[in-house]
Image (tube, rainbow, N blue to C red; front, side, top):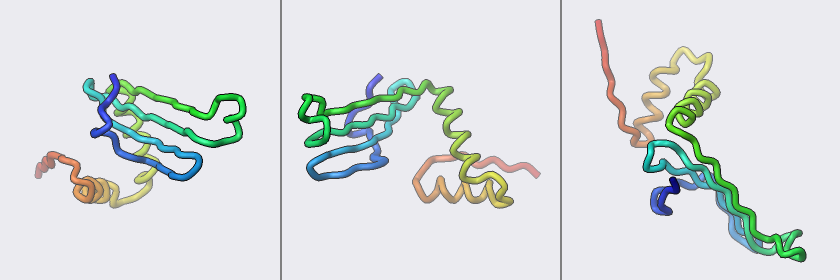
Length: 102
């Protein structure tokens, strides 16, 4: 399911003779869609192949697995991992529910 353009968050973007971008968005089914677009004057324009578009669609379980992998890459081995993740969520306005037991 394609996400609307308004819901997309830019991961990378360039302007110029060769325009390109990579975006990510949540889909209406709670998965993720990652898109890549490159177009404009380039080496392949002479053959009429000057636009290149790719899309990755991740199911909710695949998106969760990606999140786990990215968290491990960024926070593994850190004694402050829990607090660092919590601070990262606060910094990026990601809603979380904190539970505590003693």
